[in-house]
Image (tube, rainbow, N blue to C red; front, side, top):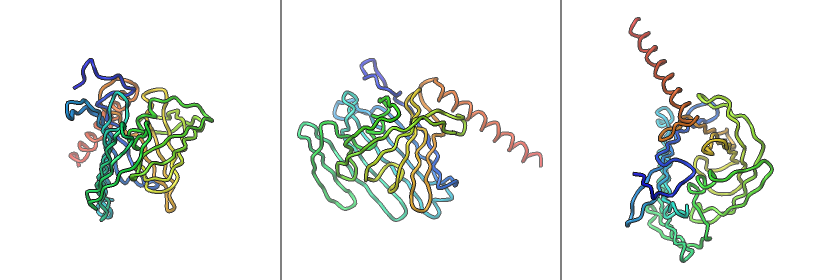
Length: 262
């Protein structure tokens, strides 16, 4: 539960972002991003979790149930622990990385392969999840280029973020939303896309929410669009989500009533 002593962050704790995932134009799954307070060893920490699952149709061919979580020190917004638990078809990955900023070391462990590795980190090294939320605190301008060091796959990678122009992105239930395009360049496994070029769109005027991600892969494109913004708050995003849910509920009720009349 939040207290008066909690650090003030740039997003509400308890927020849930729901994304729809498309392979080309075909819906293939959903990703839910949640934030919550947890306590470990007398410390109050922040947990950010991405849960990505294939829908029922795709699951019969290639089931996906991925969980990626970062546990963060809210005072520094640096990760304490990063966990990756991926189940994709026949493939399984279960790994944890713990961070020691006093020693500038991180320890990676694979529970599937039963192997451990220690590697060097920088004073501001973040995993991909804490990095994605960290950039929500930043204000970008078209034409800028930013460089970061990000941990992924038990290694540290250089990531370059080029800021493109503002574009209007059509989001079902939200309308045409002005967003900045961010073009990241790095070679590591991301949150939604294994390989290929990524483009990210961010709405800077409210919450700095990532509204859309497009992954260009050899066969097709993967598109991730924001579908709901749930949790505390009564801003534009929350109001639009509520309206969308009410409209969907009315449509479902009308459909049930029509079937009963037949």
